[in-house]
Length: 272
Image (tube, rainbow, N blue to C red; front, top):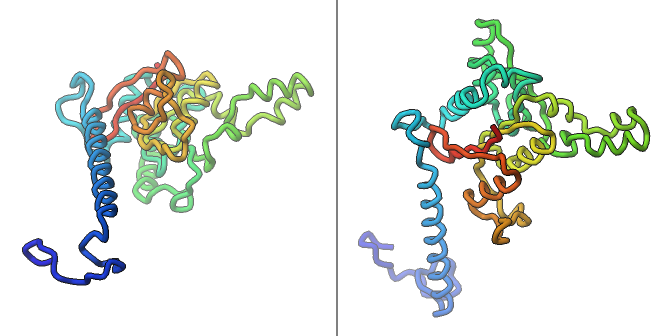
């Protein structure tokens, strides 16, 4: 292409991958159709982002925090919503798919709420960051726990199946076939997830099945990975984030939603 934005003479071979012309009218129509589809997708994404670019009732001021502060803002919201005493009950909070543990750190170190990170990733060999280790040494506090496992029914499932085992083979058999981390889930005060990606629906399902409350901030939808997700009222496949939130809310009438005061995807679904 020339400096004036016009195509230079270049190669005229239709088979050349560097050509600047369409080889046929059919190819032109395909390209224009693909570009139109991309434009529609960009418009839909912009519309969806605009729906998240709000803070409920302006309750926390006019400005939203940067994404880097979303863990601390979510932790503060959890304290306001559930109260410190409730969050500290049992084994504390389960932070599912929490990555490097930013939310667990905010809860445990900043707020004094025990938290256990559930994430199969072992970043830095499972060690805290150097500044976190220094902060703990200075304060004498305790770090959050870490279970390097996937949050799934096989490992955390509530023991409805174990009850069946117990009926057929006694209490010992029931304990033997119980999911290994089910007691951790059953003892939790709350199950949370901040942009937990593929684990989002598992948080909702396992929390509801175990009678635990939860608060999750959905992010990615992965429609090609979960094609079976359908909106109950229309049967339409779940493809957008707003559809995903509606799909999750349809699982239980107690599920509420609110908007958090940080930038980006900030809608939280929770059971109060």
